[in-house]
Image 1: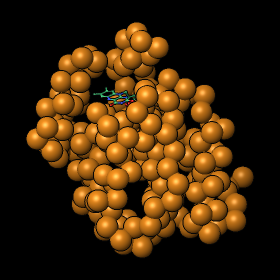
Image 2: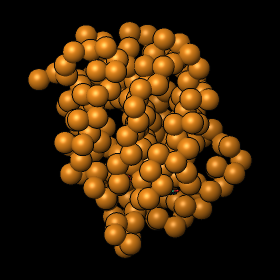
Image 3: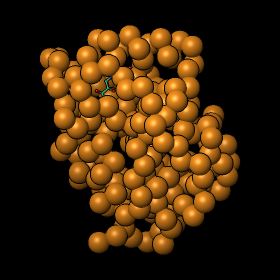
Image 4: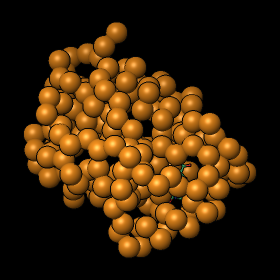
Length: 181
Ligand SMILES: Cc1cc2nc3c(=O)[nH]c(=O)nc-3n(C[C@H](O)[C@H](O)[C@H](O)COP(=O)(O)O)c2cc1C
């Protein structure tokens, strides 16, 4: 059975929940990443910017906008330098202005994707996958893409079944019979 890596970005702090700003102890995408690991096994790697985003929702929005406008590649706290040994890579993150947050691209760009199978997951509040998959495809040269999954952020803590069903489909697409018990 292939070896799985779950690369994810997720921000805790203030976020919009049902139209109201609430403080989240755990980011929405982190729930999904953990559900993937539970269903498929493998290693979790959290993409963490060296300088954290502001906890305040609106300040974070401004930071994200500025970074996106200049196509920033923010420094990370830790880098993953190789994908050796991994067959399947689940790339997970929130939709920020239609795409993944820039630190996801900082990490993605330094890896050699040839021969890897990539499964994108996005949490969002209405944009669905946005251009996340298209943008990933530009950077993961030589990878084969399987099905993507969009999860509404506010539903992420309760998304285990949806995520598990998708993981089963991903592993089937990757030519694997079954997920880990
Ligand atoms: C800076 C910022 C930009 C966002 N942009 C979008 C967007 O363009 N479309 C959308 O549907 N949701 C957007 N959202 C909502 C997030 O995608 C959603 O809350 C997500 O689940 C957050 O995941 P996290 O808690 O793992 O970081 C944005 C949130 C933030 C903080």
